[in-house]
Each structure stands twice: as C-alpha cells, then as structure tokens.
Length: 284
Image (cartoon, rainbow, N blue to C red; front, side):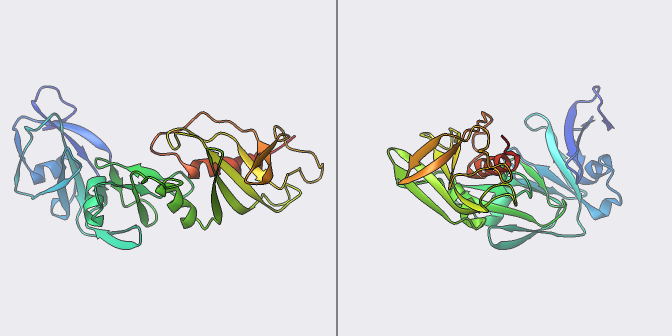
C-alpha cells in the first residue's frame, strides 16, 4: 500500500476525522480494517474504527480483522475516526448521540426516522442554513453542538409559503402576516428593529413580495412602512423614493437587486439577510 500511487490496482479514498480524503491503492482487493486505519495514520489502531461510506450515504463498520473488498463501483470511500467518545447533536427538538465524529446525511435521516418527503437542514451560525443530502458527511466535532431541522420537501396545495420559510420565521421569533392580493403573496414582517440611530424611526414593518414560481424564482425588491429617512440629514436613502400600494397601505420601495439565488437552498432567510444588509448600508 502507498498513497497516490498508480502502479497498484485497487484504489480507496480514506478520510480522517477532519474529512480530509487521501487516495491510496492496494495490490490486494481485500484489505483488513486495521490496514485502512494504519493507512490514515490512526494511532493507536485499537482506538480507531474504519467505516465504509456506501454509495447511498449509509455507513458500514469494518472490524479491525474483517476483510473489506475494494472491488466496488469506482473508488471506495472509507472514514477513519476515533471510537473513544460520543458526539451530541440535535434534530428538531430531539437530543441525539453518535459514536463517531463524522456522520452522513443518510444516517442522520435514519436516526431521526424522517419520512421520505422531508429534508434535513443544518443550522450554521451567522450563515445560511445548509441543505443536507444523503451522501453529505458532516463533522460533529466542529465547535458547538450541531443543530439540524427537518422540513417537508414540498408544500401542499393551499399553503401560502413553503414550510421551510414558515419554520424559519417562527423559529426566529418573527411576528408576520401573509397577505394575498392581486395574484401576489406578500410577507409582512412586523416591527422589525432598525439599525440604532440610522433612521427617523427605530422600528418599521417590512414587506417582501414573493414572485410567481417562488422559491425557484427569487424575490427582488423589498418595501418598508413607515417611510424612512436618514437621521441627521433627513434625506431619503438612495433608490427609495418610489411608493408602492399593497394590503391597503402605502410602502416605501427599496430598489435593491441581486441575481444570485441558489435553488433548493435560498429562501426567506436569504432575502431577510439582504434586507438587513441594505438597511445597514443605506446612504444617499
């Protein structure tokens, strides 16, 4: 066995706990679990385990003296990790444990006993939530307790907004209304705190209009009420002079555009982050 070689015939990708994959090749198609651990530098060998990552994302333990056949479909993947501790995480409101640092989306789904039409999302502080596929491998040793939420994949007829967005808004404590008018669906975030000392008001309602085809199609501009002007100068921020009528109210349109939109990932959490950024960066 040697890393990055081309003369031997049976390749395997071996990852350490940091999910760093290195390619090794063996001249024998059947290797022992301890050989895989040694290849990854796991010392002492008896305190590590080798775990085969199957094509569907499932995990399969390989015992130290168990023979593992590398003659699979393409390059096999194996994870080597310590076995002397457990890792805690949460899925929705359930506290769970896993005996290795790394876990796949497939295994997470099995532990959570999710229905087939539900997806898992990983909460990442300060960033957008990340959708987890069955074949994704997550490092539970990262700082902090890992948190995951399960969301239905598709809404049923009559749902005003996707359940992922509903879960996000209620989970973050937003007070909001959903209003359908003239073929448009509007999400009104009520009493949103504004950047301290920035405007002539400390709070305002924010309107986000969802386009037809949302969430595949991104929202564009947003709207606030009451009308905002910059504290100190009294001037209206740039590109905020147009009025818009919706839900029996007059809104100040904030013309802010961003064409970057990731299907299956972005949603109201993305748009709200843009709103907050626009409010902080507002100028004349």
